[in-house]
Length: 343
Image (cartoon, rainbow, N blue to C red):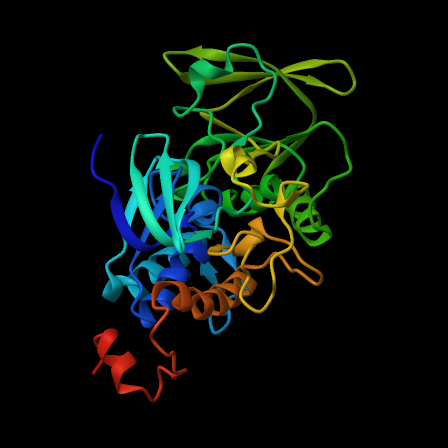
């Protein structure tokens, strides 16, 4: 067995909240390792909407999920965090006061004084539509997320679904695709009314097609779709030539091993976090971002950033119990500016 990796703080989850936690901890001289099930930082921003605009990050009128991730990675460079991707924390054991031993699915062992759970809603995977043989096309011509819009330029695309993701990508990909068809099983949508209005305008202008029905079969070879067979609501069957299909039927969220860590949960969320520091019912374990809930909770990235800042203040007591913490501003503190490499 390899020697344990020792660190001040272990962050579970490398989404925006986990990344910003590195910054807040770093300002207070705490080093962090991060474990994430994905193969890169960014969490849902990177996995589900890397090119989708976000409009409610303070000071940034618009930023994409990928852009926000890159900015956060640049911001935390001075603190040299270590990432452990494609791994999942399995067990957490209290071995000191404060000290935790953490083991992962890939066999890593960590010893940390503080644990920060920033795992969003847990690990997630798209819901696979019940279409015979769809697995053979996945990752080549069936895609559950759009990571680069340019990959779909001049292609014939069929988007299936009626929620925000389906409508958002219909609007975003319409100018890129050579032909785009939106397929939904009914005329009512779960998306925002504004998106539905814009989509119907494109249909009226002949820029996209809208079909009521469901995918009946896929035809193609070697993982490349050539035709989608659709059964329309009127009972007729139509074949639609296409190069790629994007099914957006929602996500299946899996909380995973978090449920076995002794933390109080309700409906797959951590409850009983105290809102002065977002510490859980287990001293030394904090929960920030979408994983926690409390009265007045808003599931916004900006709220997770706020939670990370307060968490770091309390975490400092565990990591440096004999060191007095003096609050400082980055705008005026030369010592903080030195840590950031700007002084």
